Image (cartoon, rainbow, N blue to C red; front, side, top):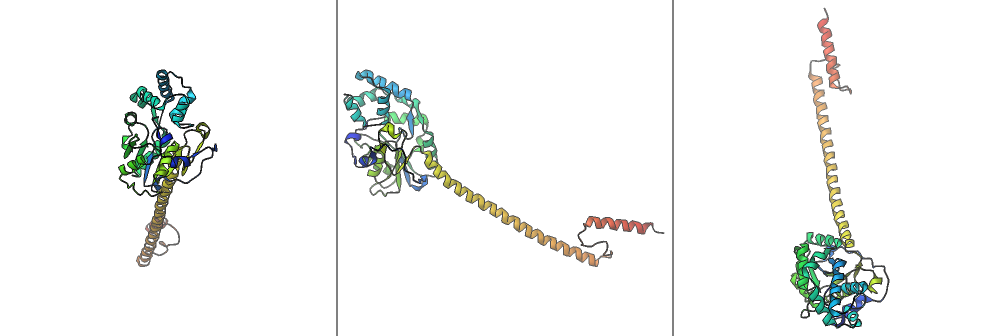
Length: 331
């Protein structure tokens, strides 16, 4: 969780499109293959990582103690995850000055304690690993401030997963302002001056993430970690998923199809090899038969002893020995 002034003052061109008051729970179905895009951008908190509830509760207890107010579990969860109305609106409705709230929040946060309480979403880890293996550039655009985000990255040892890591600031802008997204695209070595729809995607758990994607000309993917009932609205997007493993599954299907094609090719090759061996053996057998026939016709032995009538040569050799023994015993 971090300061997000843009939720009330920023560029909301994309945000207004991404938000819907509908409470529909059915997500749009789209075939999204991870490797279809040239690069991927991600939000950080709530998308790639999350914090254990015990840490969140303790933070709001300390903030409430300094502000002289008590936060309920629902209020703490909504403010931490950005559920319901914009955070600053909720804070103002509690009779608290937003600037004061964010100042106190950052003061009471313990970067190391937060890092130790942070865990990696398994579905995000799977997708990031697949993208990394496919050599697709990966960037992060987050509202989480550097003094909080970097200890998390170091603690989880995921720094080498990202080719760019951009932290929003008042100077750079806050999502859905596209400027932080442009900065991330440029950090990946891409041209952000004329973004082409279909080349990149931005995935996040907040409406501002989809809004930032659309404002920057990228595809917007909403990861709904909480139900629309909890959020109080539906978040629209080019893609909407409950978990990022849906995307990795689609990509795995493509991998399996490629693997299956390879296995089929190998089996076909082996079958052709067996046919070739059978053909060669047939020729060898035919040549052997011709040789034996030649021997049969030229040897001094009676043809009755060596014939190719289906009997084995061993049987014929035994007959030959019996005949020879009889000749030897005759007076």
